[in-house]
Length: 388
Image 1: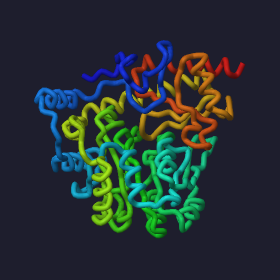
Image 2 (image 1 turned 120 degrees about the horizontal axis):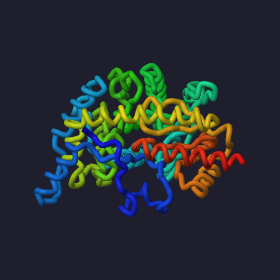
Image 3 (image 1 turned 90 degrees about the vertical axis):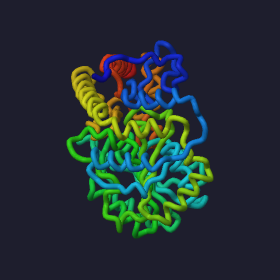
Image 4 (image 1 turned 180 degrees about the vertical axis):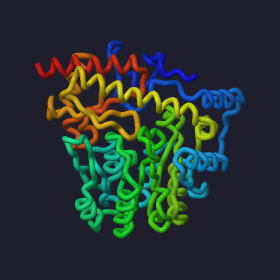
């Protein structure tokens, strides 16, 4: 019913991902090689056919649709009145940083983590405090260093923490107990917690996702969650995001900031595209996740047979593989450059996600299996040449 087999022709189309040489294969930035759900395409086509492209407001239907989606997909309730519209997760996070912290404040991050977190903090004149995740090379797993986190949240200069859940690039889902512990520490230290939940619909594990918004109300009066249909449905170009804030006073401050920064005004197709995604996208998403699970298994089998020195933990969510290259290099940036030069394979160097990623590469496997096989073959060829 849905096409996850055809590789769409995206070269020379103004695509950021495919702005590469004709012989190169980009598997780095987090967008997918699939057309979005047909219901979303139909909604966008209807909007364009109307022919009127003036200013628009955000309708209440958007928020009730998102609330219903959360209940169906993740089995938790999030009242529509908690929600604000924004033109993107990272623009919203940057605006919130400017409104709720001061220049020179500390903001806690948990490397290896999404590279744009670093940019959002530093470009706004705030300082990064790194609560590095603890890596177990034997189990290929990560854990939070809570002793270090408690110390850094207690610093008087620390006013905010950015949480990534599911965690990009490692694909980990934080448990309810872990989230309660994080939220409690932030509350007790008067630290605002922003939870970036942009990958939460892409759960590949066999258990529910736990949103910060599903925790007890008395624990989340200082929390903000952000989510978007962009990763789930390959809609980054729509510039749509939802910001949820349980505390009404905090919500009013953020709403004002989004309005001042022109981040709360939707573009032409953001609203109909988002409503269609969250009201009619369930079947497409289920098919997508089945395909992604198959790709993970395919990559596991390929590496075990052809490239056993490269390992990865099975991601609990998202379509990103965090490849442990410890047996090959301690400089993933150099390895990444070598792979591109010798094989045309374009991945993301682990150092993009902080110094803790120096042994890793990030690979996007949201593609037809033929493209994945090509990428893995290039990886195997390049690693062999690199070691020789």
